[in-house]
Length: 452
Image (cartoon, rainbow, N blue to C red; front, side, top):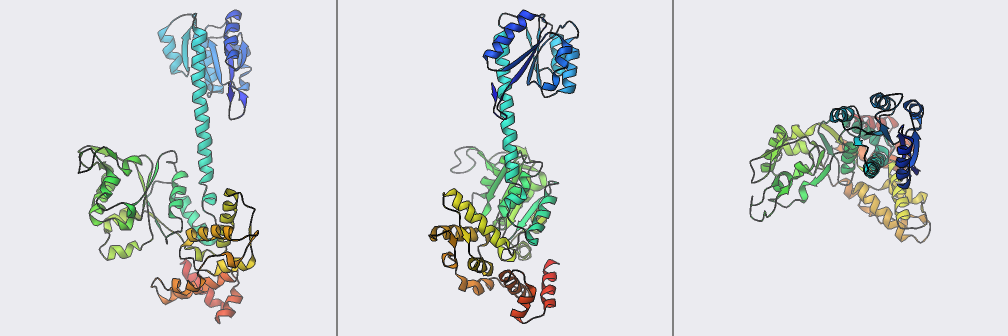
């Protein structure tokens, strides 16, 4: 058979001192489409171990070495190979010891040995193929969720996020992600999970605000049949589904106070009980939460439990709004354009300098999600290979209104205005200072205060 990973035949070595019997086994395995090589003593076989056979059939009684000695050498030099011991005598104790020492299987020489051997190797081959495919899939997932592939950007703000994500993957500490809607909070959660030690375990995401009132407990904790009216079947809760992996609770601020108390107990006890059941289920779940709301303010107003807030806080990661990420806006815009054109088999398109300036000067209240929608529509609207301002469906006149949509201290407004012009004029501090009629030191002071 052919190994799909490297497109070469599966390699089987036969170690058998009986020339006729070795020939019989070889014919069977060649008919099965394996690459086969025969050895009639242990020394000759060991000298060719560097050829790395996938499977080795080993006669237990060789003229120069015992099967046990050969097996020990295989385990030392090529532990990935599967060894099938073939013996002319049935000895249960010998078989048990060989299996304990690393042999895959032990079969007797008999009229049906060829068929047995053929079936065993087919099973080994299938298992190896599945293992190889899983490794390929795991590598693909790791590459897909590489921080730089997952989140596009080179700004100082996003580099800080990468730094925090790097710290997050080293332990199982809880993570709380904050940021405006559309900044990519779920992407950050996935990036942390798939780069952590739990990467081969489940990642379960649930949007708390999207669950109808009265069903939150059932969704999170599960229920038994008959637990309440309409519970016609057993339901696994999100905690149980995520057991061993990561549970991402998006919009956690929308959780009602009653469910907050029950969630706190689950986190403290590390166990969950389905509705309508008395059986406890032990949990090993990492919790990542996200919200676009100010959690500290909700706690102060009595709308979110303080004890649960500190239980979930863990390592906080705040995602910057797109308008504060400078040239990342252009980098992301180009990425979305290239991706859309490729998916829809369109000619590649470029951004005009005027279009770039419009993007850099826009407030983007919908953040990355809005930018993606704007760029995809622009690709459709242009009949040429260049995207111009006319193709960008943005209400630029609402920029000031968007800026004032959230009440904040005057210093914060001033910083956002300065950042707006820095983005617009490619971080040219001298030019921005001239446009706004302020000193360069004022701009530097504002930026420094932002980073504190």
